[in-house]
Image 1 (cartoon, one colour):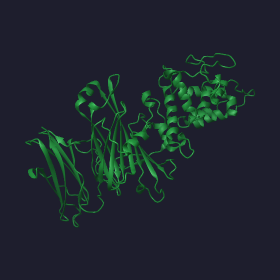
Image 2 (image 1 turned 180 degrees about the vertical axis):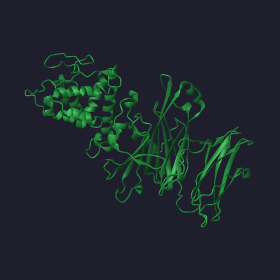
Image 3 (image 1 turned 30 degrees about the vertical axis):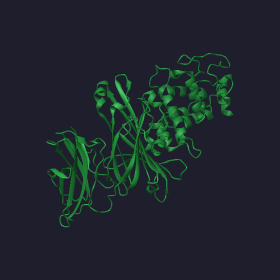
Image 4 (image 1 turned 90 degrees about the vertical axis):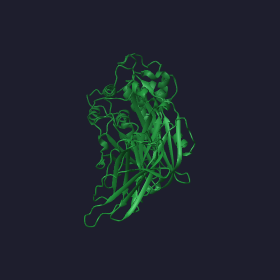
Length: 553
């Protein structure tokens, strides 16, 4: 009640949700028509691009989950009709509404210097002016009637409350809500529902991992990763780690250094997009294994050695650009996709989900050239060995069209100590990028390489071959491994060509990787099989693998 007494009659009506005083066109009580900087009475919010109806919807959506915003609006718009003034020159105590503004409305974006200034202001009138200036200096385009920064910020708060609230805690107060408000939606979200991935302390705790890269804020690292754990199964995910992923090992990241970047705002339409809207529907579509073919695509998942308990599984997709809708903005075409991957148990229980936002930008000339080309998307997961169902969904955000694929997938086990080969990676251009060897790190992370999902090549093309060999033995005297490889191409069971083996490089490592290429000259169109056999000369043991490919006409 104390808060309501400090608000104008119009905002008292807004809080009550009834009466003429709650209407935007209601006259200002007490007379007076002092104009704001934008030529509107201070008791009336500028309509901006959204129009009056959009304004009503925004008020209603922000009022319920975040009541302090309504309090803040009364201050920010100057409707403090009877603010008490001190006559003795003493500092007026900070009102509860002012304290709510900087403790609950802007705690993540107000700087320490601004907070100190605000706390030392003499009265409520000066605090109201401070709030006006606070938003004005963050307006990315003062020429427009709407403050895009403020709109996007309140939208993120509303979305955080809607998406992350749990156990009676408002969404904006949770760890996930804070990161979302400051950085926006992550490019990748990985959800682990598998109890086997938990430890004795966390029991069957679910885990979410958020990945960001190439953020607009130049003061932040290029890559950021945040891991959240639902320790008690209440839906409140608490931050477990915040890291800067690097090739040499992850580096801890201090979240206290985060700030909302407002020097360069996103396009308003993108900032207003709800990244979690329809997510439950997408999950239902992918877990019920209903087939959708509005967007045809091909995918392939491969197995490589990962961490001690998990196998590293890179996944590659090809989608025809002709099936995607590019959204034209000035002289560019923007393609926006959502990729969702799910693993299930043989009984159909969902164990793991990963979603990734993909945004591609091409010039008009590039878009025309790409019309007959595939759009390539790559991602990766780490998962314990076993038999699973794999479910892949692709959503075109510009049209709402969906494509799905479902199948069985075996995550291979490389931890048994026996000599074993990884899956074979075939590509036209280069080899797997960002290869990292070391404790706890996979040997291959093919983020930028281009696998041929259908393994089709043209006569005369260069076919790049990549594979890894695990659990080699070392010579007791020299401490080095000794491995040889035999490669051949077979058609209809008959050898067609034997590929010269790559030069063997002895090392003290128990795992080795081989990368080479072969020119496909004098090959007739048709199906072929690449067979590879490796031998550990120290242990006199062998292992083999093969993969099919095609030569196009």
